[in-house]
Image 1 (cartoon, rainbow, N blue to C red):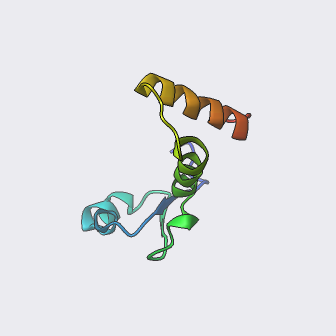
Image 2 (cartoon, one colour; image 1 turned 135 degrees about the horizontal axis):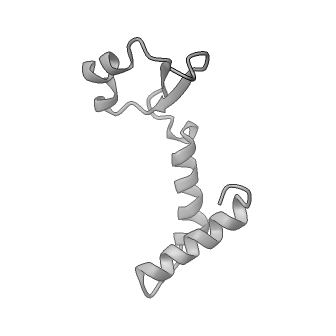
Length: 86
């Protein structure tokens, strides 16, 4: 209610569950806009782009000894690439 003058935009891929009637009913009357990405355009999804960067720059040709070591490498990478966010 406090933010009634603002709209929240939620970006969704074309996963079938995102197109459900239940979701449409839930956002109805709220300040929420669902923005569906076109089919086969995962590169438009910021999360997918981030996963692709991590895959290319952290995971490719890697051999981490443990999950803890992998987690540390991902954190280090994110701090380097997005210093103000993490």
